[in-house]
Image (tube, rainbow, N blue to C red; front, side, top):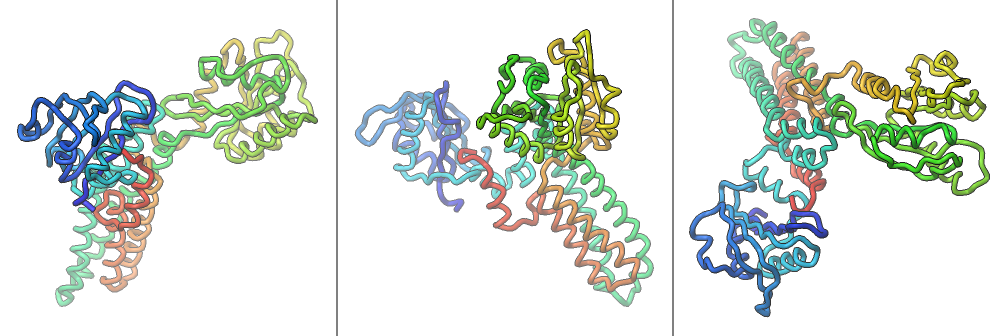
Amino acid sequence: MLEDTIAAISTPLGEGGIGIVRLSGPAAVDITKKIFKSKKEEWSAAGGHRLIYGHIYDQAGQSVDEVLVGYMKAPHTYTRENIVEINCHGGIVPTKKILELVLGAGARLARPGEFSLRAFLNGRIDLAQAESIVDVIRAQTETGLKLAVAQLNGNLSRKISVLQEKLLGLLAQVEANIDFPEDDLEESTGEELVHLSGDLLQRIKDLIKGAQAGKIYREGIRTIIIGRPNVGKSSLLNALLRENRAIVTDIPGTTRDIIEEIINIRGIPLKIIDTAGLHETENIIEKIGMEKTREMIGKADLVLVLLDAGRSLAEEDLDIISYVGDKKAVFLVNKDDLSEKKIGVENMAGLAAGRPVLRISAKEGTGLSELEEKIFEMVMGGHLSVTDEVLVTNTRHKQALETAARHLEEAVAEIKRNVPVDVVAIDIRAAWEALGEITGSAVTEDLLNRIFADFCIGK
């Protein structure tokens, strides 16, 4: 596979200032020369990391576009192969036409993530760093970006490598009992092995402990706003977004479909969803919207239950609260700016079942800071924060750490039970291999295919 020269469009399709067609592989330069003409005829002989001005021509000799060709010479490139990037005018037609010409000149269309896969296979990055590239692209907050860049820089990889080295040292001590049983090393080193294993196990568990916080920063929290019609759900969404995203009127049923936006609460991407008001109706469109709302409640990580301070609690309010069940929720008594209030915080204490109840005014913007603080407290309560040295953000990494921890726990138990050392060695090696799945030092082809299938074609 590495003998092929691959090509793909590396910029989003659509109108823009620049479109980039990227080639990587041994024939990248030769393929480019077939379709690119420049006054610098021997532009590739002068070395890499240069931009060359010229034109792309089709088979009939007609100029396709005016371009800048970036030439990067191996091994000092992203893939550690020769790379050519054709910078053309942004637009669907020129980029697709140039890609067609490149493929016709001998390149193969890259598979999803194949540029990054080559960077991994050629030792440019490890597997954890490769996965962080997707996180950088998909980061929804500056905090999420900071975590992704830290992983791209190898922070997690270095931590895992240290753990693997210590596991190999532990394995060497255990295997000494297998190789030299006459020295009776098993009895003399048993307590030390238990101590070393326990220390490593704690380090792994510390990483697992931070994984929940990392997942929150990476993937966000799915939050749904529910309530009767005209309680102020759309007004709350607009107030949290600091913009008029949802239509707000006094007419019940204005919101009939799901509106989803992302807001940033102290670095956490809150995927906040405004829903149709829940009430009895014969309108078929409203019924569909309310059915969607009920489905979304089941999928939500956090529910914001909105009540109208100017209206007494009704049967519909109680039904809505029953839909929430025991989910994580905040109960909000809205329209606190009204002079006459029929619902207060004290009315909600029993119905909230120990969950927070806040007074707010979506119209005036009061109480929103307290709401954001309460959301952060509920979401991150008991979890580590982004200020920690390393946060595991990837579910696959967490699962690998949990596998390593299980094998190491079993190894400790086996040492204490005086189980034959060759059995102990199997569990320690299995722990090492589980950690290796994170960085790629121990990885299967199927795993690589699953990981890089999530990448875009041009990356």
